[in-house]
Image 1 (cartoon, one colour):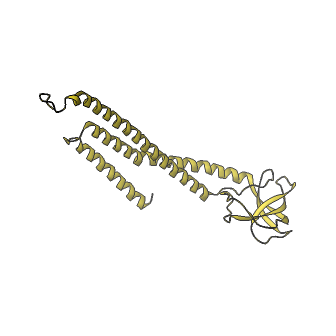
Image 2 (cartoon, one colour):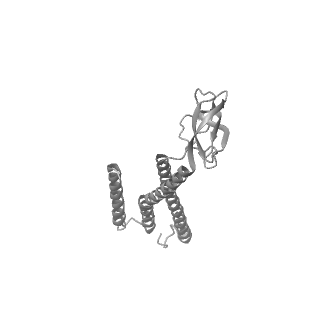
Length: 218
């Protein structure tokens, strides 16, 4: 954990402590109603869940995703191999491909060539493969990735890419957990407000008709 993360955690902890202290002192305020106290405790509970539970869920999902992606990397490197291919013909113009996160090719425009290569079992294969856009000609050798059957395969995922995906998964889990907590807080608060208004309506129905009459104590 970096120094900035440590400072942020200390500030969040101090904020939570001040919130708890404020709620504890506020309960003795004569203007504070029971419903106010319940709403304050609800807000404080939601805050603690966002500060404690949501980061834990995000970290857990990030670690779990990173572990799963590392297994995927090992499997891909075990079953995908680099092979040399000989260009047989070149497409007349570059073709735009969607970026493949596993390919490692950053340009969005690549070129298709018809090439021939050897499969792991020694058999001859040929087909259309994407290569980086540039000047290619028949007889040129290019490097491609193939699987155990000799078919063209995407480049295996690398560790930095796995870390990025794991970080995104952890961040998404944190945001989703915080959103769920906030949605639950709002739903519970809405129910509490409806119950409070219902009680006020019942109380007004009891005293409203006599409001302002002499001898009624209003």
